[in-house]
Image 1 (cartoon, rainbow, N blue to C red):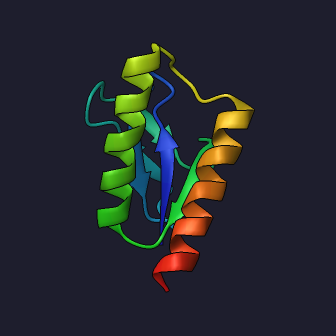
Image 2 (cartoon, rainbow, N blue to C red):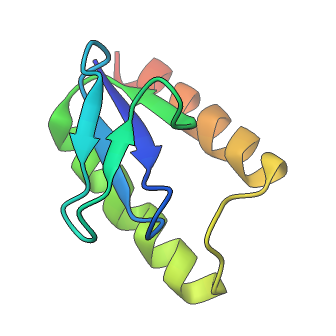
Length: 88
């Protein structure tokens, strides 16, 4: 399982192992405290994490936003849960 988080410095999405304490942002170099970073989604493997991050970055670029609203976050989690349910 991996957690999708967002860098507080440059707002880039990344993923971490849930037991990881720190993550160095690959874009701006900020040391992200994983315990304090908001978790957008929990995914099964790194391939899913990378694919979802690509989709999120595309959405953010298209809308010009830096963070998801609570409604968008809820929709993301619901969509992912439905996809996981259908794929098992």
